[in-house]
Image 1 (cartoon, helix red, strand yellow):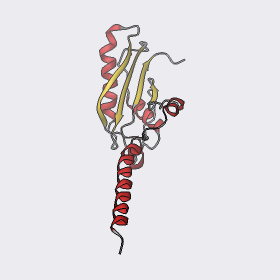
Image 2 (cartoon, one colour):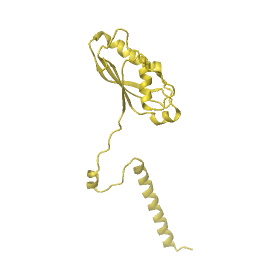
Image 3 (cartoon, one colour):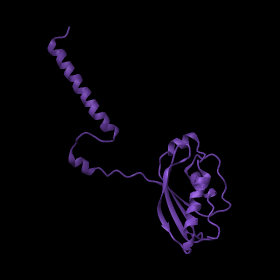
Image 4 (tube, one colour):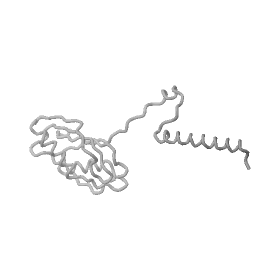
Amino acid sequence: MMRPSTACAARRRAAALLLAVTVASPLAAQGLAPATDPDEEERRPPRSLPEGLRGTIRPRPEAPGIGRIDRIADIFQAIQSCWRPPAGSGFSGQEITLRLSFKRNGEVLGQPRITYYKEGTQKDQREPFVRAVREAFERCTPLPFTESFGRAIAGRIFSFRFVDAQPM
């Protein structure tokens, strides 16, 4: 049998250990450390923001369709094969960049955001150009992601730059 003081000390150590674990676990899960030397914090490089995935879509009537998608490049090729620039725009010089994410099943997550628009030479073509970009996503989505690829890219930010300009 343990002496009362030994049992009490053992309980205190167990409680202290439990308290340390419960405080450290949430901090570790968030990538934070308990209070440390402030000089050490200054020496660490700042954390970088996650990069988005970018691709340029140009008019290409002979763009091949894509079957199952299991590579990032295939996403941009699939959208390119679905994009039909407005009739009569003929290299109008317009550009539009959209930011969006996909769900794991290939549907667009939320509302795409236009982050850039360049008018080009034909100002009356803006609405048809934006509509053609919107219709490309309506025509193509949900994209046919493989199950593992869908899990890997779900929620990642993609930037699609649609360019109606003469290829260089």
